[in-house]
Image 1 (cartoon, rainbow, N blue to C red):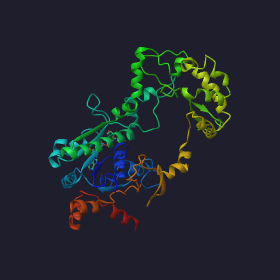
Image 2: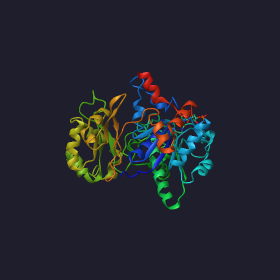
Image 3: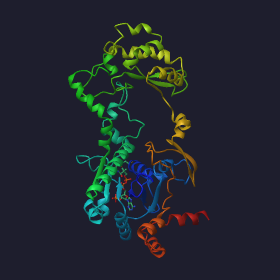
Image 4: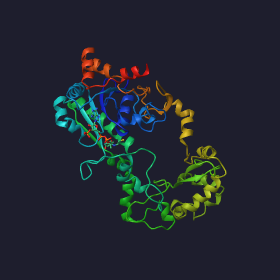
Length: 427
Ligand code: COA
């Protein structure tokens, strides 16, 4: 039995942040009913398409293990169906622009009347305050949550990161909030409102940078390599380049082949406990006893020069050779893996972290499977639904509709008829 089997989720999410959350819950076994606009669907179905008229990888990779129903929640009949689904579900998740659900007529107060046990979970760009009404996408959250101002090199502009910490990061936070509210409902019998703001989610992931902001009031941040280079600190936590961010200095170093391969680099950490091993490996055994190098405080003002010397050694090896030599000596390091290398890595396929999925329209493609593994509830990744693929099934199974009632709802435009239409088009 899957961990969340028996939990039914009304999934009003779109784009990336919300779908990440509900996909995770679906992997854990929840029955996720994705509600989409008739004939249109989640905008990402059509965004960044690599194959004409086929659901994009953007959509398929964020909506596995779900069922799709198309429903016009702004029509009278659509609202009635939506109410029925709210009664039949444990959780409703949405990430519309602020106020959209209220405009549809479904405020939190109204939802509590319809189903007091329902958990109503939302992602918005901001919490209450000056920006609460703003629409927000990933990079806005990275910028307002403290990530961009602390990412990049000290002498360069702020940078956004490739990791989708605003969207997928907040989706993860929301999933935890939902499971927590479900656990609480076991005791209270009541649902509750769960809210995750993207700015807050990013800041939570940047908490060490707020730590450094406060440390700055008591003196320079000595572990930042700018300190060793004599660059003064300003009033705010600076960008730290590839500094490790912890107490153990680290940096990204070139490896053999870097001239032609943009990913021929390794992350190298000079952990204090294995400093002697580092000195031996790079051919500087004299640094072990030299008071200028022997202790972490003595090395602080020479971090750049030390990494330049280590790099002279790493440039004689490829990134995997560096890993093979350093790992047995407990020197923490990691090759910079390209997406191509990750896609082809057999160990990630074996653990189900990278999975191959078959889709009726696109054929086989790769996706990221569930990164969280439960010993008794393994996750099978099943393909994303076609638009409206389960409309009839959901109306019959969950709301007890007859074929005539379904036909009537379709005629009224309350629900879509995409599957029949695509069959006609195919013929
Ligand atoms: N039936 C009828 N109407 C529907 C519907 C359905 N099944 N599903 C959605 N709609 C309507 C909504 O009610 C809304 O109508 P309204 O503006 O008249 O109230 C409209 O479709 C569009 O919703 P909206 O959320 O405003 O979409 P958008 O494309 O303009 O904005 C975002 C997209 C992501 C910027 C915005 O949703 C947002 O800021 N979300 C919160 C933060 C977030 O999650 N951002 C990250 C996304 S990865």
